[in-house]
Length: 115
Image (cartoon, rainbow, N blue to C red; front, side, top):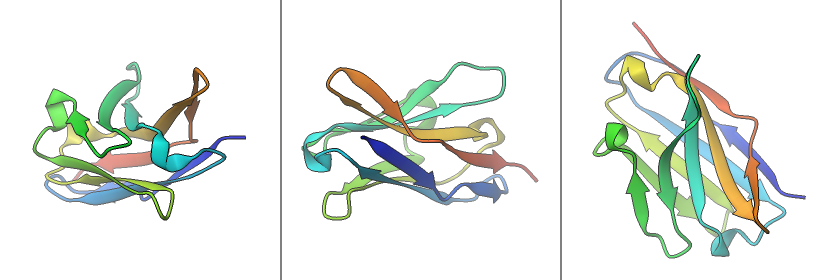
């Protein structure tokens, strides 16, 4: 059973920073690409960042230069460092992986960027 659990969300002022974490179990973490998605109210879930098993990274245009995805294969943990946060970054953030052709998401963590 694949289990993903996100943490680290919260309320932050514009320009602030947060670091999200996602712990994974039930998979051979080191061989899987991992992803962060987000879903804002009334909008579809969107891909934010990806890190491959070899550490290559990619980002959605709105977060390039502000967010950094990383992983710790010893701790089976995925991270998302979010800097220079903007109100439009407000969303529920989910980590994701694909195993045997199936998508798995955690329960999500709320990030709110507001004065």
